[in-house]
Amino acid sequence: MQEESIKEPNFTHPLLNELLERAKGALDNEGEVNEALAFKALKDMDEAVGDKKVADYIKLDFAYARLKLYLKIGLNGEDEMLLNKALKVIEKAPYIDDEGLKSSKKLLVLQRKDFL
Image (tube, rainbow, N blue to C red; front, top):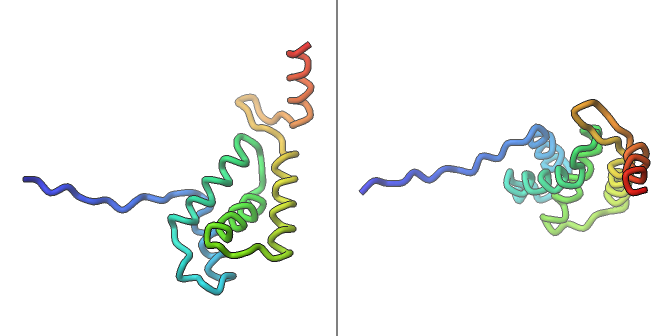
């Protein structure tokens, strides 16, 4: 019989190392911070951002808050403020398409024209 090799999951994301460094530097229980949870938080962030142009620091604020929630650490006032700001920026961010950027407002106008 052939032995099947068990592979470690490959967690790759452009912001993974930055999120891990931020979490391990800021959290008391840094031993609980691992790549799997950080990757899960980054996937949540990717879903929230979608195809919008958002700065990396905003993405990291969102992912950091999600990571704290996965670790069952309550968000303090500063974390809540950063998360709320990140959500507002994501909501208002312009979409990215093959032709370049389209602002959220322009997209809504285009959708309205299609509806009429």
